[in-house]
Length: 336
Ligand code: ADP
Ligand code: MG
Picture 1 (cartoon, helix red, strand yellow):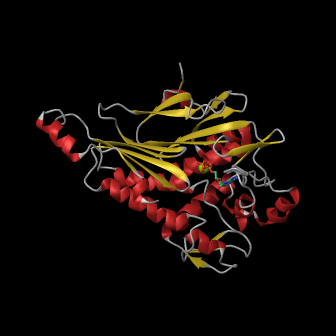
Picture 2 (tube, protein in one colour; picture 1 turned 180 degrees about the horizontal axis):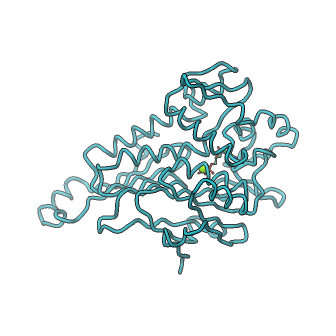
Picture 3 (cartoon, protein in one colour; picture 1 turned 60 degrees about the vertical axis):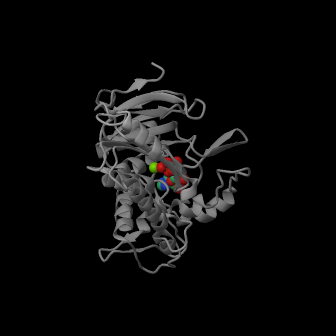
């Protein structure tokens, strides 16, 4: 993302100096800095309270580096090199390896509902822009045999191999990993932070008054940006996957960007959104995507098996939560 597209929320130095002179900006008042960027096809909003000097810039540099490492569409990224490897083992950055290792665990645990090898099929679909495209059943059938996470080989020497023709897409897990790393960079260098990568939110520390952060869970049935419920969290991430993020309606069918790896078509499960709260945003990200594919019953089972906390909203607007979720995160409907 180009720096010039960024909106700077920091008080202009001159105004800050004036406030300091008036004694209005010193003492307990926290400095809040908000910056907006565009990475990973997503609006990224970073809000830092009392950040260390240069931290914000460091965070954007990290986003830049991760985009260049993990994007499917950037030539020379690790993902691009794996996808063009033609079956050869590819040495990758240890971080890419780590993400793939976790992806494989969630893939297996979810019965392949989460599959990073979905890429040949996601490549057929167009969900955004003026001309969305639903591939033909023949097009999908031709690519489906290439979707098989069991064939992704992660070797102890730090290489990755994938059979010729297969491709990976980290869209369902990478933002979570990046949120974790950005949160880590913030720790001890802010009094608090809210790091928002689209549906992935990481809350670090506390608000200036010492209280925990409130995070909204979107109403899948409501207008864009409308809120269905609120949770309160500290030092953890809240990740929501939803069928309303990228979608189009064709012949009365709601097509969205989370595909069922078994069919190659948008998941038609009973879930409209899945929210997972977990200190590992990477785990939460992959699990939330898997939940949408699995549907309410399978999702609850997966979350319980992995020991994860989650809240699910069905297409009908019903809410299901894992045990203790409501109490742990003060889950409340909004408006109350
Ligand atoms: P978002 O990117 O909107 O936050 P998700 O985390 O749910 O949403 O990821 C959706 C993205 O993951 C898709 O855009 C696609 O790149 C990829 N994807 C789609 N279906 C699957 C799947 N079944 N397993 C793994 N990744 C998927
Ligand atoms: Mg995800």
